Image (tube, rainbow, N blue to C red; front, side, top):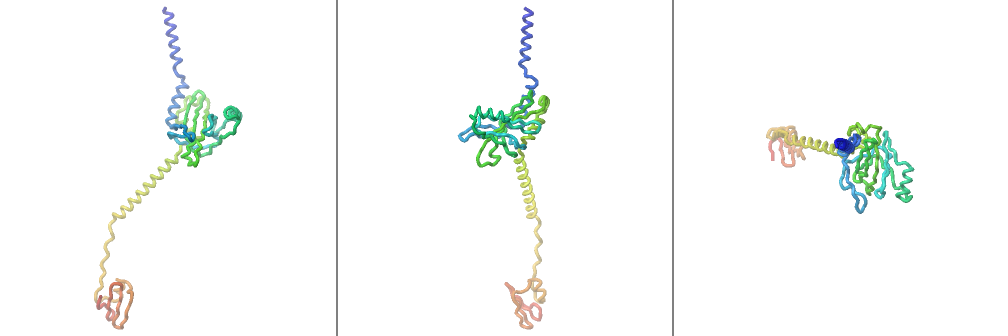
Length: 271
């Protein structure tokens, strides 16, 4: 009886150990959780026009050429491989088998996604045992300012050196992903530019405010025309007259709103 109980306990212990995740699986799950927080996944659905992004995620920018994308009408998206800093598109043999199987030897509508194309990530999986991170992406048509939506999709498998993902931190893996798919910072730059403009505008506004609040210029001393002033003194105050009437010993300086009479070169009357 005791032997049977002991065997049952041992069997139960082995069963419990078998249910525990392997270190590689645990590391992969942890990495996947961390990376999906760093790269927010977009939600994609289909409507009458085809695929549509219903919830936007992190916008990424393609930094290297060679990623082959597929139109929404294609059910199968063949994986690209990114290894040692180089993108490797699906092999011609795989493409041939795929075309025969899924397209009835029809035309290949896939195309290479241009550098600087902006995309959303829609799915991310980590295979720590195989040292692979696979990322599904879709074109961000609104970010690319296209007139006609294309919504091409692609799948990229990031192949790391053997054992790398067993110990790598999530930010290290993210840095490797960013060498191919960089986080879009154009929005941040635009926001920074706007902030700079606002700050500059604020400084200008403050300057204007300071100018308005500055003490006004002191009032000019009132200039008066008096009897006995010479012709030069009057011209110094009022400027040259519009007309001069010379009557010998008597002169008239005629201005727009007054007439000044000089006798023997001095003011005798103002009217």
